[in-house]
Amino acid sequence: MTCRQTSAWTLAGLALLALLMTLLPAQPAAAHGAMVSPASRTYACYLDGLRPSGEIDPVNPACADAVSVSGTQALYDWYGVLRSDGAGRTRGFIPDGQLCSGGSPKYAGLDLPRADWPVQGLRAGGEYEFTYAAWVPHPGSFRLYMTKQGYDPTRPLHWDDLEPVPFLTADPQPPLTDGAYRLRGRLPEGLTGRHVVYSVWERSDSTETFYNCSDVVLGDDETTPPPEPEPADCSASVEVTHHWPGGYRASVSVTNNGPRKMTDWAVQWTMSDGAELDDGWNGTFMQTGRTAMVHAPDWNKGLDPGETATAGFKGTSDEVPAFGSIRCG
View 1: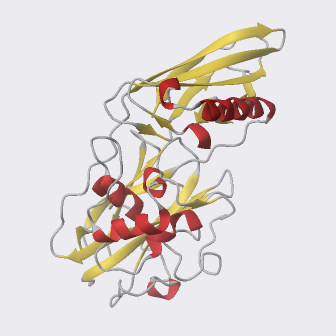
View 2 (view 1 turned 90 degrees about the vertical axis):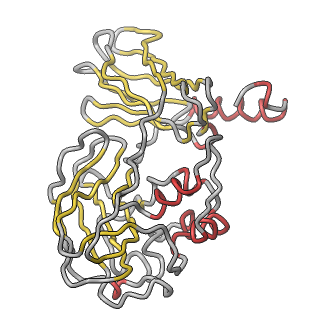
């Protein structure tokens, strides 16, 4: 948001928020991820609704109705269907009729019982490489379930609609390559018609668990999957601004170099040996080993073309820390 676009009252509010952020400790960032092939409902509707301006205006009727229930932010945040307290739990934890939202009110529109969600054709009994996009690597495991033959998409999805045993399990999960986990497996045989692939990503380094519904049609043919998320056209820097014996302060900046608005931006980098990130401001920070990351704060998620966001953090280090492998998205 630029000064030209902001009223004096809004600027005052942002200044107050920025001041409060400097007083708050950094919070752990969510991993963020979702199935993109076959596309989760959030990702499929995001692709359906995305316009060159960066706005979301779905054409698909189910996606449009989901927006009427949950708003467009649920589609901008297509990778965030999660429960921070999930701990891998499924049946008995996520209520019947709320499987696709993971029981999160923010994504309630995904639970609408409809037979016209965007769908991908898959070959029953065939081999398939499932692609699960993710922000940053975290240890964990995947379980993929399929609905039973006779599943009725016009009724709310219940746990009894799914086969009790996953048809594909990855424990431990494969390594993250090019921003995605890739799980190769064989689809169940003998199924036809509309079905849901229900994926559960359970992190082993926290209780955070992700829940995704991907709508498919099973038969003899396989259709071309939707495109994987394009990397954001952005640039970022992480620099030390002050250093003292045993500690330092640093700044992070990210600039949108592309033609469309960036939403929910993030910057990831590696820390030098012995450097720790203690707390930060104007963003949500995390550090896992030598990998560190800042995620956009709720009050400054969007970056228009040419716009830059900045954040800062402080930490401990005997030497002036060095930052490398800087990525943004």
